[in-house]
Every structure is written in C-alpha cells, then in structure tokens.
Image 1 (tube, rainbow, N blue to C red):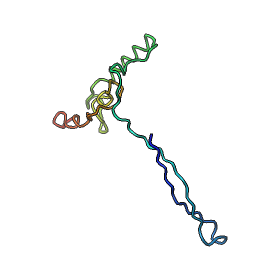
Image 2: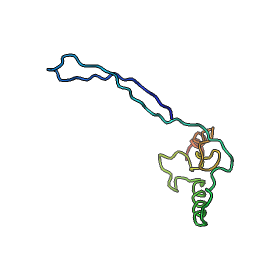
Image 3: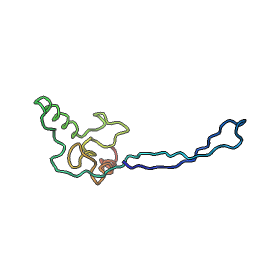
Length: 117
C-alpha cells in the first residue's frame, strides 16, 4: 500500500466579534492508496486446497473449483456488468484463484463471437 502525505492549509475562524482576522494553520492528512502488486508469481501448484481438509471439505473445494473454472454465457446468468465469461479467466496466474495474467483476457472476450456475446 502506498502512503501519501499532504499538508493542507486550514482556516479557523474564532467568532467575528472576538477576532477579526482568521487564524490559518496547517493540518497533515495521510492517505493510504491501494497499489496493484502486478502478476503473481509462484509455483504452478498454487491454487490447490490447503493441507488438512476433511474428505467432505475436499469435495466442497473441488466442486467450487469446477464452478470457478467453468465458462458461462448469457443463458446461464451473465448480465450487463459481466467482466468475462468465467472467474478463472481473470484469476488464473499462476493458477486458478490467482491474479490476472499479464495479458488482459477481457480484451479477447470483448470481441469473442464477433462481439455478439
């Protein structure tokens, strides 16, 4: 996270009858801005289940991974604010559940099917 610090002049008026000239001081404001770390590296084995899952938890993880990796279409519920035709299209680096690949897959999706998708 990137830290930015600004010094902002602040005018303080202490009642017109007591003081004819406003007192001007400075106030420091610190702003934290999120910063994209870029494409995540790592072992290709990333994205798998964590160690120690029970048999039922592993079944649930695999069902979720299948759904995450599945391509969708409008008939299956994609709406006007969709980004891609599947979660795994953007979250694929270094494997399912990761960050976006270095080449944005949304560009290819925007023209997929002659842009009728």
